Length: 79
Image 1 (cartoon, rainbow, N blue to C red):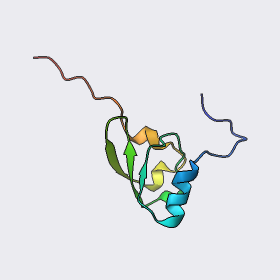
Image 2 (cartoon, rainbow, N blue to C red):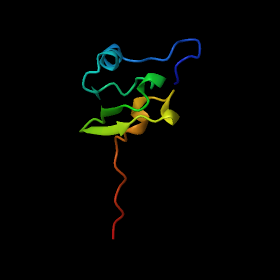
Image 3 (spheres, rainbow, N blue to C red):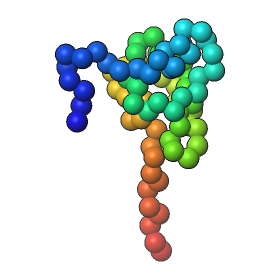
């Protein structure tokens, strides 16, 4: 269920402070919304097993971080 329109987009406080302090860009918060401030940054996002690097593009603004990091692999076709 999506977040209500009358609420502001959610971003984790620790992630927001990392952007302002220019700290390392590693996050486990897949539920955070991508803000325009993030465009151009390269983030390491946890997918449940490993950290995957993603560069934030303008088309991603408004979406959640977890949408761009797959958590499951496609099953290989049997021969």
